[in-house]
Amino acid sequence: MKPLILAALFLIASAVNAAAQSPLVAELRRVSVRYHEDPSKLDTLREGLDKAAAADPHPQNLVALAQVSFIWADVRAKTQEEKLQAYDVGRKAAKKVVDADPKHVVARFWLATNTARWGQTNGIVRSLFLLPDVQREIRAILDMDPGFPPVYVLAGNVYYEVPGLLGGDLAKSEEMFRKGLELDPKYTMLRVGLGKTLIKRGKPDEARRELTAVVEERSPRNLADWTVKDVPEAKRLLEGIKTGS
Image 1 (spheres, rainbow, N blue to C red):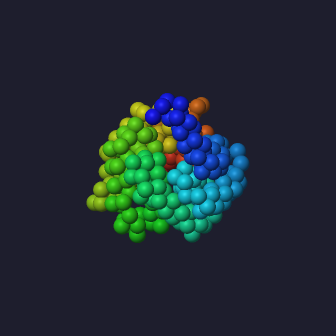
Image 2: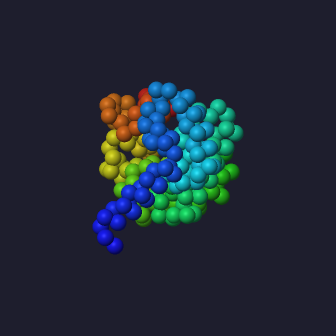
Image 3: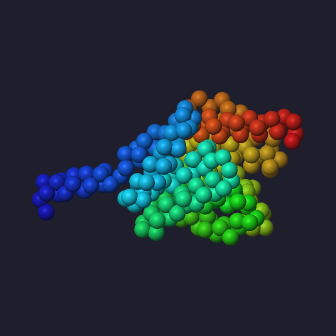
């Protein structure tokens, strides 16, 4: 096929892809790191992406719906029921993409993350039936893209939260958080995870150093998460070290 024809076909395919993807997908990319400035924008984005994904289940629309559902549940949901419902929407949206394209790393991440958070919110013990699914997704992501930092947040937290008899392992939790930080030292959610793991492992001095670094970080990877989640959690953990609680 002639180069000009190939170029034309590529441009047509790109235009079709762009048309299928809702403009809200690009808006979410901006808001996901700035939602602390106006959290109500998450409400509008969630509603819009839910409609966009229903009208056109384009992979980017579904992945964006999975992401905004997770963020909204964490930040905006007022009740446990609202949280569980939003995480479930996110899980189902991501699963549609994974079923069609098992190599879609980001979709697998949001599938696992929404599933894990649903289980955490519902109660770890009551939700242990979901653990094999989450662990399978983590292994798949690590196999496909070991350079994907967010998966180390998820893996570290799973090892931290799950009872030892069922696969929990604080040493592995610490390993996962440290590996993630090697990839992205500015990813403060990883450093918070490392700090709380070090506390549980009886290493308060190391934990204090990591948590203080979170509070003092001046260029966090995600400014919104750093402001709304990471700094408050780091300060809470630092106070716990100080008081011995």
